[in-house]
Amino acid sequence: MYKTIQHKVTSPLVNMGPIKLRQPLPTKGIENVDPFLLLHHYGPYVISEFNNPFDLGPHPHRGFEPITLLFKGEQLHRDSLGNEMVVKAGDVQWTTAGCGIIHSEGPTKEFVKKGGELEGIQLWLNLPAKDKMMPPNYQHLEEKQIPNLFSDDKKVQLNIIAGNQNEEFGLIKTQTEVNVFTAAVDKGGEMEINIPESHQSLVYLLNGKVIVNKLEVLEKGESQMITFKQEGNTIHFEAKTTSTLLILSGEPIHEKIAQYGPYVMNTQTEILEAMRDYEQGKMGYLY
Image (cartoon, rainbow, N blue to C red):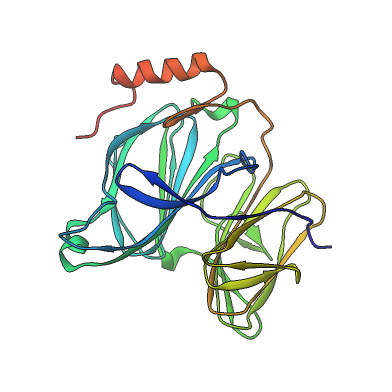
């Protein structure tokens, strides 16, 4: 049984300092799709020595997991745990902020010099209260490490980053039960995805045009995200043009959220403690 569609929304452009990016979540009428708090789609930007807006210097996080899925280009990740990794197109970086981490990310110097397109997704995945102060951690998957499934006609490649589908299991270690999939779909490709009834879920279209559950159309530049009610256990999509999709689902946490800037906690007191701890250097240092 197909999951019932709850919302169908656009992906409006918003300003984040010098950067313009798409933000379908949160948006009007949708505060979150618990446990997913934020979805940013950045780019494609044409990066060069004369144009490099997406260079995020050192900044802190606490209480959630910031995740980057890179579709085009090349980024350098550095953090206060001592990690320094080049994330390339098709790769995933999964940071567990826990009690606190400082990181920076932006196009590598080599990529800026040669120029090219940069495009990615950043997700914020909430942590339950019991895990908000866990030790921070960083996971990096190269494209070649990510398990995938193909439709019978090979027109759909489904990449299993976290969670599982048809006995293929993602390699990311998660704190709660979530599925994070991407799909590259040729024209005419279709697939049915199994999603537990207990999960909240969404489909986001990066580019192309697809029909979801044989009913609703997603098209780049128009409506680009669909969220679902929990009843039902499958999501079906069919591509009308070559398309790229992000499919997310997760067991909702159902806890109060207090959020301020780069911190996601359960109370305002905990937010003030996070700000104080960052100022006192308790989240480490990154220069």
